[in-house]
Amino acid sequence: MRRIVILCLVAQTFGQWSSFSLSGLKLGDKKSEQLYRYGGLTTAHQSTMGIPKERRIALGATMNKGFSNSGMIPIIHGEIKVSWNLSLRGRVASYGASEGVVQLYGWGMSLTPGKEDEPSKWTVLLDAGRLNAHDQLYLTGLQFMGKRIVEWKGIPIQIGLGLNKVDVNPFGIAGDDSPSKVKLQTNFLNVGTSFNLFGLKVIPQLCIGVGVNALNVIDNLNDAFDVAVLSANKNGHLLVEQAKKYRPDAVAVIDNEAADFVRSELKHNKITVLQGREGLLELASRNDVDIMLNGLVGSSGMAPTINAVQAGVDVALSNKESLVMAGDIIEQEKEISGSRILPVDSEHSAIWQCLVGENIDEVDRIILTGSGGPFRTRDIDTFNQIIPAHALKHPNWDMGRKITIDSATMMNKGLEVIETRWLFGVDADNIQIVVHPQSIIHSMVEFKDKSVKAQMGVPDMKIPIQYALTYPQHAPASWDALNLVDVGMLTFESPDMNRFPCIELAYEALKKKGTMTAVLNVANEQAVYRFLKEEIGFMDIPAIIEKACAQHDWVSHPTLTDLFELEAWATRFVHAYPIK
Image (cartoon, rainbow, N blue to C red):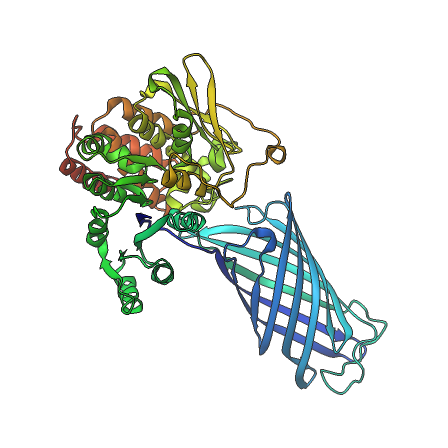
């Protein structure tokens, strides 16, 4: 059994949202001037628990002197969502001067044309249903609602405005003495309206991280791996759950409060809990393990990679910034220790698989594919209007916030060009980027005889993770397989350098070498974080990177100390850029 260290600070096993709305309802009998009024604050919370979209169930609660629980089962077909809704309600109702409890249950169906939750566009919701009370039809309704997503301080928020039309059953509920015995006249079938004054839905950006996917892979491989180390940033609850299941020797937690929680929860489990950046680096230096999976985000992953390589441990590398920042240093350390870098990014895993059994000297060029991100076809004149909520909508991949913005600027492809140079020893002039919107071909290798190998598969990070852990084997897996008939068509196009200037900046940095790729990486990382905070605009990102590259003190063969000093300088430089 091989022992593995898993370093990943962004990890969620489920998505969730929270919402609240104010609404009102008025039903009445004009003849007797009796009215039923309802208004209140509705809150809801949904946890998808990793369930596919078409099988998710939502539970909600209505805070209006009562309760309301409902289940929602959406069925997705193309860009149309049809949802069947089942509900059980109990409310304190007011009717005239009397009060009492009306027990209601019901069903409904809603139809949502267009792409749900598409930023900055109104989505129309048509909702029809019925409520029953005491086994008799009480009312039916039709709802028309518009909703859109806006962003406030980096938080995507859904707002909704709607109007309902309610038809009251002519038979009503027998009797006329109390709210639970309402006699409604047959000549007023359309006597009520319900309205949503407003609604808000806060949608946190959540993802299934490399670490969670890696644990899914380890589960799939049964007893092939013993998890020696796990790590987390702030998600102490998830780390405790994972630690109790996989029983590692140690865990590292960056956040102090989360570390205290984890230490308390694991105090009887004989698991060492290390705290902060120092604890993470200590665990990355262990030499009693076989492999370390580095799924850290940004330049923070560089030092753990170097520590593991110096310890003679193989590194399954998802942190491309390690090689972008310190490719030369890592190459030197590999020669000394004999450790290997096993690529986990889907593109580099694809290249690696295409090169198995091949002579690198016979390679003519490497073709990196990319989806083109969310703005591949957007009018370039509107790029100054892009906000984080727009850029976080990747068409194919479920990723963390930083890498999703890198995909939107296509800097991720630029960084992958640099990583390709260090992984496979191919010069920049022999690395080409091709936009492939379907994300089915993950990369290609063209040989000198002009034959081309391509690696294909569904966009699922578990596939490259498992290959890195089981190389050179292709172990059996239980996840979805590629169905080319369902895919239908594969298309390709050249990237628009005017639309995505970050690509050209990356090529220029790679040709210059030295500290140029490191300052490119740090400036990009810090600019992305400022964009996510809405301190700068989308097009400020490449502008800041270009200025940082031009103004830094270039070093041809940097040491690790040089890189740390450069990281501090570039961070200060980016944060000195004026707020928009």
